[in-house]
Amino acid sequence: MPRSKAPPPVKGPCSERGGTRFRIRICEAVGHRALYFLTRKEALTGIEEATRELPAAAKGRSLDMVLDTYVQNAVCSDNATRRVAERRMKKVLFICSQNKLRSPTAEQVFSSWPGVETDSAGLSPDAITPLSSEQLEWASIVFVMDASHKNKLSRKFRDSLKNKRVICLDIPDEYEFMQPELVELLEIKVGRYLRDA
Image (cartoon, rainbow, N blue to C red; front, side, top):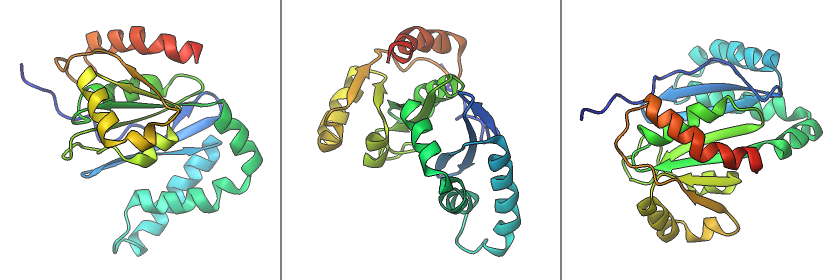
């Protein structure tokens, strides 16, 4: 069965997150990054400022770095509000091998759920977004697609998994990106944990 291409490069620029957050997703050849803003206005301002700043800063800086600077300097000014909003959010990490089909599908499907922040990564060294210990530290719940991922995760990231809830979904690598059957299976298997978490 031929595999579909990786996820489309841009999802956004802004999508509402649980009524309190807005996301800008920046995708480059080496991976992707999601940045969150407390209001739609701040997200749009972030895009405008980054667009203005990028030509002058093009040497060695990419759009995601410019937006990271904006996030650190501007959005984090209201720390108390941000901390309350973050405590309410479920931080969900989806892991597969290559981060091309199953885990990015899960990330996209659940990114629009209220009160849920999503990220995805792959365990293979050549994954689109290789898993990092920082992603595991960020996550409050981790979903792996099959038992081999859970074993590999335990071997490679044992220290980062302390007190982490890791759930194996038993979803085989036989689906295309955003294939309706995969979306339905994810909603059944993951949905109950996110509603009850």
